[in-house]
Image (cartoon, rainbow, N blue to C red; front, top):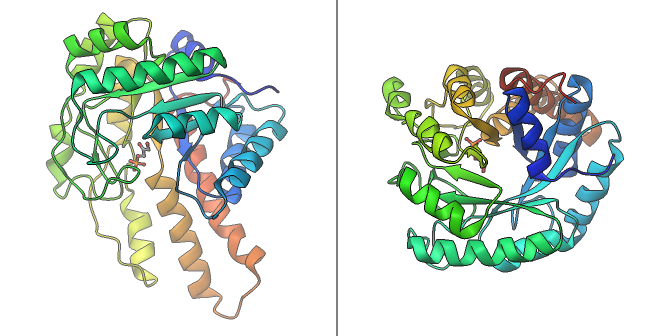
Length: 319
Ligand code: 13P
């Protein structure tokens, strides 16, 4: 099956009232786990990669192979998406490698990581939209800043700039993005809230406010991992040292979908599932050195987590 653009996958999600999971991958094994989950669930899927973040030194070779792999899964309606492109060049390289969707994250200046001015964000995003449109590729932009350890953005629990509904309208009018990541208090990485009440600080009401004013723009939730305590416990019981914390609950994600979220980004939960399964396996099988035997449980953990999320997001059975 030909790869889908983000616009066409999310248009179907809009009609069906569900969200499509966008799962971060940094190796071919992880991509296979995501695509196998989508195939088994008959679910559409967004496979996403971040520039500069993979198991390989040669990004061009990695992206070419990823593109070929996604195309091989014939029956899976899949989008290949660049997550958090920081520069015009990141987005152009992804388009040249056959990605069908790119995110330009111009909400922060690429050189200083400081929140960018609205005008600078608009200018860079519009440039990317113009180039992507010529290639039939969709574009996601970001308004407000999502905290945590984004691509190349160090630190945790940093100040979040919430999306402003008036600015969202202006941003979309001026850039013509297909999809918009709205900052509502989520953050990237395995430490989101250090107290159980942290999730209460999300401003999910912003989603419906923005959706009402931008009915034709697809809204995206970043930093959505739930950080399952069981996975963290397994990692730490087997030699790991992941700081226990609190994530976004499945109920909050459902609330977001009901309010108009159509794409949900998830990296951390799958990574925790991979690490937990791999560490437990190596602990229980200390004599096993065959990489295929080690990878099998890791891929299984990754696949199971993605499968669970597809069911929660309502995309299972929608292929
Ligand atoms: P998590 O770290 O919460 O999985 O978020 C990932 C993400 O939003 C990537 O863009």
